[in-house]
Length: 389
Ligand SMILES: [Zn+2]
Image (tube, rainbow, N blue to C red; front, side):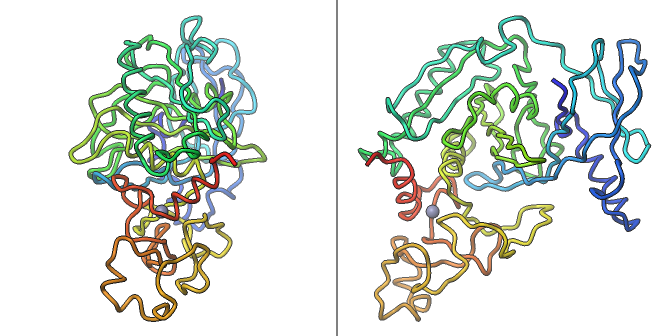
């Protein structure tokens, strides 16, 4: 494998600093000519071949748990993509930015035989026999199979108890496939080290994940438009990271989400997984706080909105059915019995990383706070997506 996860190599913050410096000088980072170069090293630290330039990866917001019950995000570069596999004998890579040394990344030694491919995992399935959507759960750092399967059962039980999956018809559209291989060392298959508080995440946030390039490659056989993968981490530290589908240079990369099995005060570990499952089923975030470091305008009309987010707050025009009487379509926000009722389906201002200008259907939803149920509109969208006719 030739791809390098810059976040995992501890390089992302350094790269962001260099980027900022280039911007301050008036240069556009991504448009600068070949600012990133790489050379491979053998075990004597000698360069193999000459340096060559690699495309600067896009920076994307990676969602992860914030304060208990809520989600936040950190801007990270996607893994570096190499056109070719490392040459024979390469054990490390040296990266340069605009000709200056940036960092050195040791390559992970190849895993023992049998672990190199998903084919080496034990796999089984629960749920629907002919599902419209499959949630893949992959073991990371587990040495005990029964311990892993216990957590899988706990997660599946939580899904089946959650609305709308507790409805007949809807549950028949979903399956969970688990994949187990015992960890061969403390870092597991994806080099997933416990996060260091205050270094790997902001404040109380819990950004927790392994090497994304490695996971994306290994889990590629599981990736599709009708499936998602979550890597379950055996750790005593709570946290995780959202998955994403990134289109870059004509390819779709499916990055799995990550979750540790440690619950935090007031929050069960699987709550974030259900929020991520919501994304997998086409739902957008309903929280209104800004993404840190985000360099996009949430009100950009070019952004495609999901079925649970609206650009208009006018009840006659929102895309979901509301339950406010027509006589109050204009003044419902001034009527506390409607505006503060958790059962009101209308257009509440604040969604998708902005407190103003975008609207969500109900006051509370799992796509807003992970410990709530999905709102009525999200439940219906999920049911439309996976329920069997
Ligand atoms: Zn919702």
